[in-house]
Length: 129
Image (tube, rainbow, N blue to C red; front, side, top):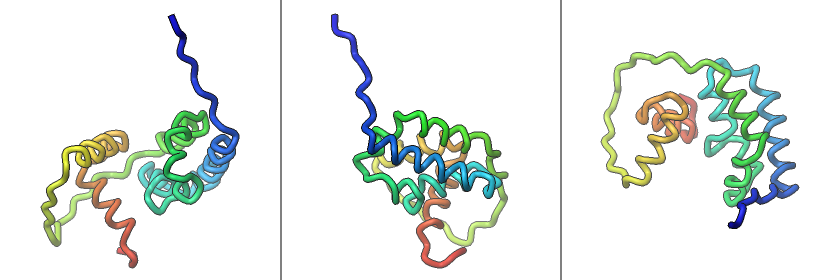
């Protein structure tokens, strides 16, 4: 019987993971809500995209630094649900795989898919809303 062992995390990934943890620790106190800190680190324009290449994320997610970052994020409160009047309605058909990925991320953040999509869309706008 063969025993599976964890592949060691490369020194490069460890260095980048420590850099992201230090960044997150530095800015954590400036955010009131978990979603804001999450976006500062992991959104498409977040620090993780500056530090890690796309092919490095899987290894990064296995580090103790990633777990520490998630703990910092999870220790912040979730934002309150805000009532708003929609100024426009967009209906978008998504492949099941994309919707599934969005649903998983929304669940992990404790928000609806609509709220997650809105935050991702707003983060990509050139002008602040």
